Length: 268
Image 1 (cartoon, one colour):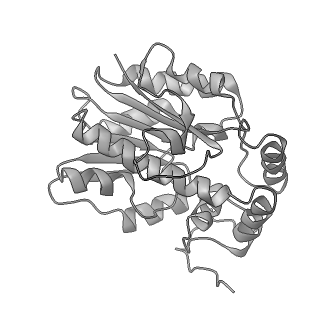
Image 2: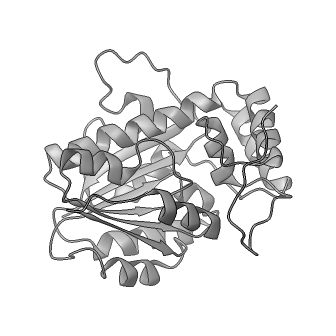
Image 3: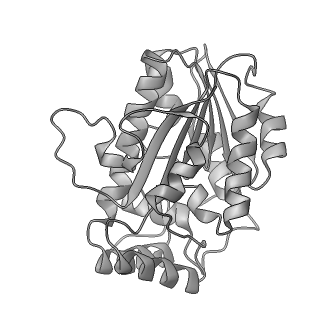
């Protein structure tokens, strides 16, 4: 039996309803979650047994993309929106392992996530990490805060992993992403992952509805074409928007298709 982790005291912390970041942490094998999160996570697994594989596949996708951006695209700074609870191989850890001068700004709207990020996500002396409590629906706040750490005259890797699927309204979702993209310097990259029902169909839609009904963070699926729209006007890299496990996989990889689509595009 897993014991509940001792979290920092925070008046905004509600342990009576499941939270997407803590459920995700549970699927990744972390300990920063409560019984209510594990129960919600197990409920999803009952319908979609390979759900933890998808969580791990997205983390592997992050590692491959960040390596590509640093080694092949020359990116040395990242804006990571929707950080989630710290786990293994976070954006700055991957980037700074390749070049310790890399700079990263983490954004999340959960005060618990930010508390853990500040405590656990420590930078190399040559680089830097900053942490901003803000919502994707507040792109002006995100950009103003990011400019305190990042140089907007140089390319940036804009990371939106598993966060846009929490914006239920299409106009809000497309508008927020577009505003962030438009602020990025030429030569920057947009990296986006998003839940889809195109792999599992109705069972995925059902667990999304049930999670929301239980008081969890609202989440929705979008189709491949709806996700491609986030990259309109950008140079979408091969192989396009695909399940995360199929984006430039390692040769020895045998991961199945997962319920998260991902894509990478050059801006400008």
